[in-house]
Length: 508
Image (cartoon, rainbow, N blue to C red; front, side, top):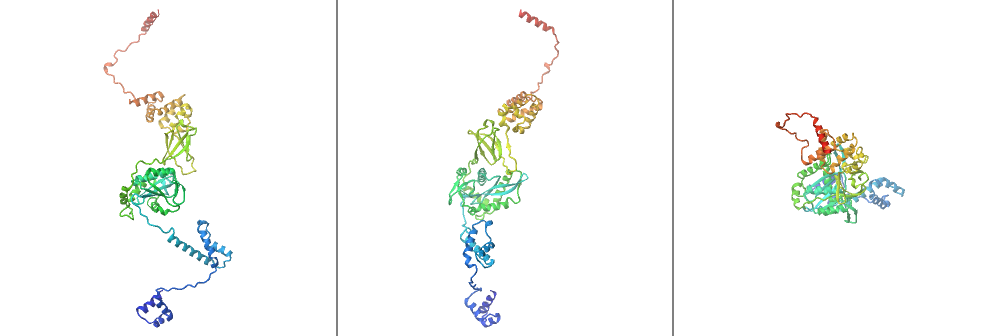
């Protein structure tokens, strides 16, 4: 190519004769004339079309390559294996020719995909308040000195690109409902559309095209917040490319280095604060200014949040004879009056509410154990068993629900169980919390222990004084000096004889 450039410059610019160029370069005059006459600026060499030993097998090899392209990466045959199969069919050429054919076929297929397939995209633009995108990811954090794998919910406004990240231990319905509720609260309202992938917490069955059988509870949540759910095609993450990129950016901005917090609530508070702070530092890219400035304009187009969605998932359970219901390997206590009866479990991200007959019976903090090698846990509320021990007071001594009584009750139990009938007396004292405020009963027990009179009668007296607003100990009487005793009475037993004579006279 350099020699052709020199030839053209000598002849066309410096007007050097062809004979002199022939002498300087050693090329023939016919070759020099051919280059100058064609006007070529770079040399082109014609590759002769020679027959190959692979030609009779080219169609078969191409068919194999199409079949292998549809298989998973671990199940595909290599070019070496296809060469060996061709040899068995009569191919006498080299492996290098087969490998060159495979490379050329893959390059042509990649060019077709980039020009007319998935490698080509259309830029999208969203109006203010039009849509948001949602997705899950898996990340790690240290909670309470333990490395925990978290399910992280990402929500992003498509116009202003304001985003919020929230972490959970599970990726279930109640977690999804809470994540969207918290996201709408932080983002300042609800857009008109929501763009999701085909997650199992939203889609029960995928139909043809855009047809979806949407989960009933997810539909209720979308109806409550008045947004239209829209689902991407399967394996088409680019249809919600903003949130896909936000997942990648969040790993760099939030999860590296790995955050350390005492519990999940502290981590989520920090994530919310960090996301809002980053809005002021990140440029929108399409709109002028930062994400925070674009979000301030978009908030005016969002629908106000209103009343939060009661995002629980309901399960029907039957209470065992030991007043327990099972959920996720763990057991939770229920009031004894509902033993052996059906109840409804309302599952929230942080708590479990047990209801029956149209009323809420009790509530427990939800226990989520990610490690299956740990034993199942039982969460008791000793108040649920008071009706049982009133009929069976002997069960109080070794009753598992009463192992975590308040300290004042435990001290009182230690005093009462030392004497006969103390277990029944202790049960009657514990039953006071069914009619009176528990803190008032505890206060009366503590006052009785301090006074050294640990009896039911004294505790009842102190409890009624507290309820009536009277002091626990009577105020000492300051008697005036005029009432002081100056003349002490003398013992006179003869007076009793006189009384006896009067009684005899009456009897007669």
